[in-house]
Image 1 (tube, helix red, strand yellow):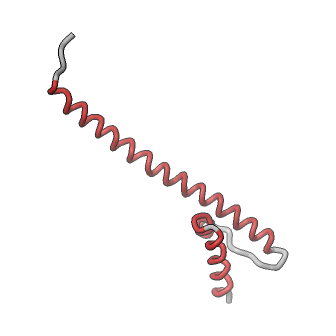
Image 2: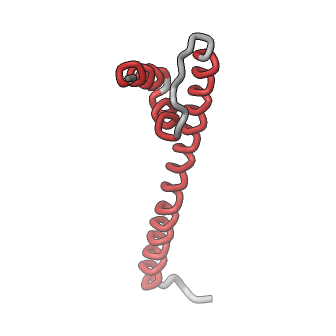
Image 3: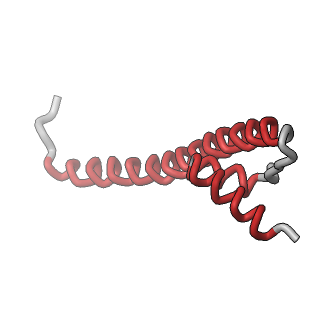
Length: 91
């Protein structure tokens, strides 16, 4: 068994750095897509509930990916914003 070779330390360090960068470039976008999918589902569920309750009063909000993402990311203020835009832009 040989002794410690200081010349091999740099290639191992560079290899670990490259591996770290590759893993980060894959994990970060997947995490962002997962977060967007979660907010899309939550926003869609909130819009569905608002439309279910609003149908009793004749109120309807569009259920599409853009409005679902807006409601999912902003929560209740997003629903209020969508309702305000619907009422102000209605012809």
